[in-house]
Image: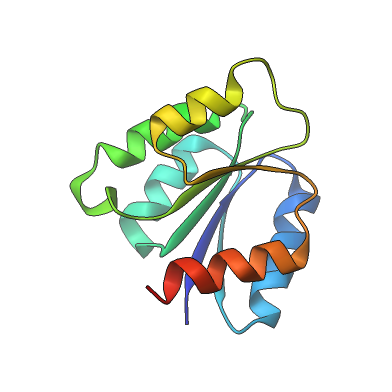
Length: 121
């Protein structure tokens, strides 16, 4: 079972993403702020992380930078999700270490493909 952390300030998005991975037999970890995500990472050690670009207390690129600075998180695949990318967001996300910048709504098949690719290596 893969533990997937989703960070988004929209409860509907979190619920939808959680249901999608749980149907696949994986565990969804949910955080609505960057601070909640940092706490969950320490408690649960996720295998993959998806974060919204715009959060109430930070942005996705900054959160990824904070996570990457933690030795045990350096190699965890991380992705940024966004409904409307702002100028420079893709570049900032890549510079922070995101594997990809994905547009919302993410297709279920895309989510499945990413989970399979990054957890079977």
